[in-house]
Amino acid sequence: MKPIVNPLSQYLTPKLPLDISDPSFECLNLMRIIFYLSRFWFVVFKDALICDYTPILNISDFYNAKIAGKISRQLQDPLMLIAGQIPTWIEHPFLCTFEIRMALFHVLALDRDRALQRLLDTFFDTSHASASERLTPRLERRKVIISREDILRQAESALNNVENSRAVLEVQYENE
Figure 1: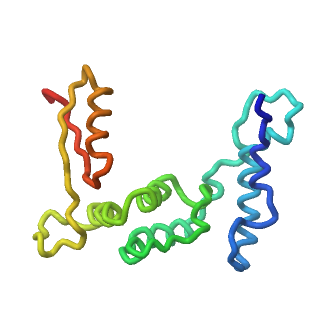
Figure 2 (figure 1 turned 90 degrees about the vertical axis):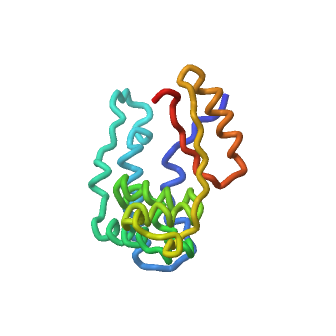
């Protein structure tokens, strides 16, 4: 049987896992410890009969509007997207809202072309731009038509066809 790992052990460290000396990191580390203590408080009382594992503090209590605004502005900066220079402290989930974390995910998980295309689609009207005015390379698109009766097999086949491609896969359902 696998031993049960205490989820708090990785978060209750005296320093952040960063090699940068900045006085604000001490405050960030304190926020991180309080956040995870609030989230995993029941581990401290492992011998008690606990029926509710709800965090003590709401995650929105940790949001910081100034930090969220800074992250949001950085995610809208094309130079930051091209260079891929994202601060390492952004990884903490309690610093910003889900929407900002989703935008961060799109920047980190997708390649540079897709991140720039998403930025342009979100903030600029590119429908009137000519091909010569485009700021990003055109992404290849592949369209597949899938039947709902055999959706799993056909979806697997479609994904296998584009697995080594950078193309955007568009899915349309048969007779819809």
